[in-house]
Amino acid sequence: MMVFTMTATEKRSRETQQRGATGQKFRLGDRWRGYRAHHRATLSSSVRKMLREPVQTLLTVLVIAIALALPSAMLLALNNVQKIGGDLESSSQITVFVEKPASSAAIDGLALQLEDLEGVISVTYVSADEALEEFKALSGFGTALRYLDENPLPAVFLVQPLLSGEAGVSQAERLIAGIEELESVEDVQVDMLWIQRLNAITQIGEKLVLAISIALGIGVLLIVGNTIRLAIQGRQEEIIVVKLVGGTDAYVRRPFLYTGTLLGLFGAIIASLILITCVIWVGRSVEVLASLYQSQFELVGPGLSGILALCAIGAMTGLVGAWVAVMQHLRKIEPK
Image 1: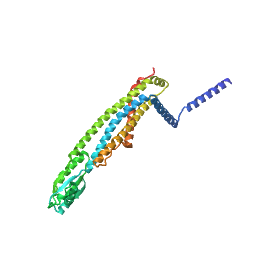
Image 2 (image 1 turned 135 degrees about the vertical axis):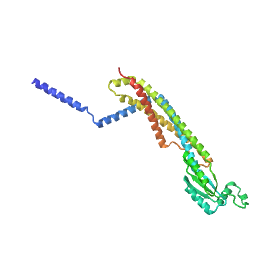
Image 3 (image 1 turned 120 degrees about the horizontal axis):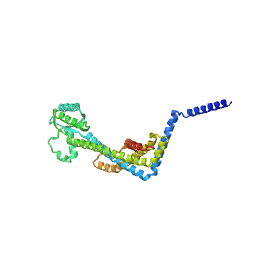
């Protein structure tokens, strides 16, 4: 009887152990919910720890914001300069003076030849009489011009070329050379030098923005890395305890990665606010200056897409800086 009782007890104990082992198997959904819960807890914990040190957090975020705002402001200014150049290029025209006297057939043939040239957007004909009337209205010598025996002004064609950067300038130069070879053309006037200068300045600006962005990006990485290094040193004993109870490296480094990402994100948000404030502040003066030149130009801000891109860049930069710091310093902390 005793043997039977012990056997039954062992059997029940074995079944209990089997049920316990079976109960330890987690389904994929349970693991995913636990994973999300831990990420939420880690994120909220990182935010609370940053709020417990407001001065240090604010100073770090402001430095990151300035480092992100400087190249962003330069890039924004460059985009506005390119917009001005695009408006000027679209308004530039090639003036083709027709020989005097030229028959109507010759003028019609020249118009067809100009329209067939490559790189021509539109061709506008201004007769000699129309040119004279326009000159009277703009010059203020209308009364004196009445005493002229004949109209001294020739007929002209206003040719709108296709201009887009350096390639557009080269194409416009070839277009001018082709127009000068046409019959009934007396002279061709266009100023391409300012377009070349504008393109050269734009290229210099792009290289300068790229160099400053790289330098300040490295600075952001160093700032975030140093902040994470100090955080790791301050929580060294906690990290050792977590590793002693079986915490993985991913579990240990997750709070620091969230901290770096949040620092970069908050810095990018403040940088966006700085950019928007500068655009509103400078935009008023730009509007006054544009109105003096009878222009409709308005200063272009970063826009929603630019702000989202800046926030993504800031968060990614903070994440990379935190990752480098964690991988460099966390491996040195091992329980003994």
